[in-house]
Length: 82
Image (cartoon, rainbow, N blue to C red; front, side, top):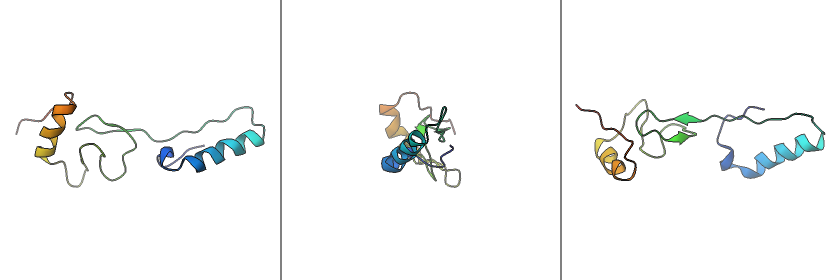
């Protein structure tokens, strides 16, 4: 099964899927879901319209001040030279 969103946002539905598969005595069953990586701050997880860590989106980019603040907590964030 392929999910198009973050399963942690609806755990009940996720568990309902698992229980349904179990009730049908399936020999093999798997659930796949998207895992994205932000090109700016390296956040790994489901990214909808904007990165939940740094706010980056392809349409608006990311705020430089926000990046500088995040870099204090996540040293792997590199700020490009302009």
